[in-house]
Amino acid sequence: MITGGIGKPVQKVIILDFGSQYTQLIARRVREHKVYAEIVPFHKPWKEIYAEKPSAIILSGGPSSIYEKDAPQLQKEILNLSVPVLGICYGLCALVKHFKGKIESAERREYGRAIIEIKRESPLFRGLKNKETVWMSHGDKVVHPPNGFSIVASSENAEIAAIENIEKNIYGVQFHPEVYHTVNGQRIIKNFLFEICKLIPSWTMKSFIESSVQAIQEEVGDGTVLLGLSGGVDSSVTAMLLQKAIGEKLYCVFVNNGVLRKNEHEKVIERFKRHMKLNLIYVDASKRFLSLLKGVKDPEQKRKIIGREFVNVFMAEAKRIGRFDYLAQGTLYPDVIESVSTRGPSDTIKSHHNRVPEILTLIKSGKVIEPLKELFKDEVRELGLELGMSEELVYRHPFPGPGLAIRIIGEVTPQRVKILQEADDILVEEIKFAGLYRSLWQVFAVYLPVRSVGVMGDKRTYENVIAIRAVTSVDAMTADWAYLPEELLRRISNRIINEVKGINRVVLDISSKPPSTIEWE
Ligand code: XMP
Image: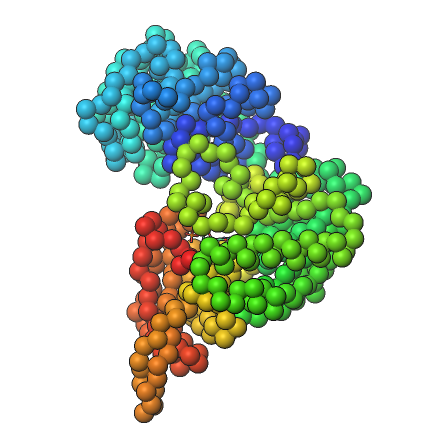
């Protein structure tokens, strides 16, 4: 396959982001059809967009009203690219404004399900019924299409729910085809990609492996690469991909920070060193981390200490190994999108240590390789399977960098870590045994330093509490607490109280995100 950069196929759809909460969904929907899509901010200079040679452009929705002061504007040059364009919601209004149609602020904001009636045959709606259920979320609405555009669909609230200009290859919809509630949304996107843009579905994990292996080999040459391996899905897949590309020139450093899950370090060593024959360097820094965490109660302090110390340990190890030319990271696409939309509260509420200043400096000097930075989480899992990794490993729940430290409320002590490890191990074992692990985004235990009275045998106990957190989610931006079967909860609670010394009470966390977050700290 011909490629256009690290793992990028030549055919690509560019999505101009006008700030919609659904922009990432558009990219995912396009990629589900095996066409590569990339999100860029609406203000990215058009010359740079030209240089990317997109095969099609999609204009996302957005929260603004098109005539508002400072409303994001479409650069007119984008429309001179002579590639098909699809405007969604705000994107439609941007097109209509540009071509001098008429838009009005609707008296009533239309939000939720709506029925559209398709008025005439259009390649965008090929294969759809006359009436279709769609998802609307807009304030502005088009009241007069621009010259040369025809009305293709209407809804009760929006006379003009879809327009097209076949000659110019420009299409616009008021509703959101990328949202699941638009029942045939995927068909609409498929029609745009294949009926209108005539693209070839070639974005597969097999082709991604081929092109990224080649790109990594070219970039690294005779050099060596250092990767921080946590044992999680992202860094493991990164390791496998790099190993395939450069073999022995990859060095993986696995740091035990003292707040890993039960037996985790042994499992990681077994899996990667013995089975996968990775060049794995194990650093047991648990004592160092735990002594730095002594007496620290504040969540942000804990995160900063662990983040900083990780970089220290990692860099010291790098020096010890000697020369290394590149640093690799398992960064994913959602972390690097220069999105103009709000990214959900957690990015600002908690400091993630993905891009600490030291790493940012390296990134600027081009010394960092991030082979997964084009991929969404589900694509990373697919890639892992394609690389021969086990389902058990590929479908592991996310585990935060600061580890159990942010699941122990208050001070982190070795004794509390041990208690939490035991409780967490029982919880995950039971969830797996019940066959529920894959259906949950995350399930874990939280240690609460709150003592309450209990009775065991004939004796009074005065011990701490374990909270159970189980959530479903698609991307961790929002999450719902999961409803676990009563019998299972009963067994988990019994086992934790009976088997974990220091715990005499188990409680269930029934909070969703937002307003809560997934982790407790
Ligand atoms: P919150 O608690 O913000 O978590 O709802 C969202 C997702 O991010 C994970 N998480 C982290 N991952 N380093 C990580 O690598 C971190 O510092 C970190 N903090 C939270 C969390 O487990 C959830 O999946």
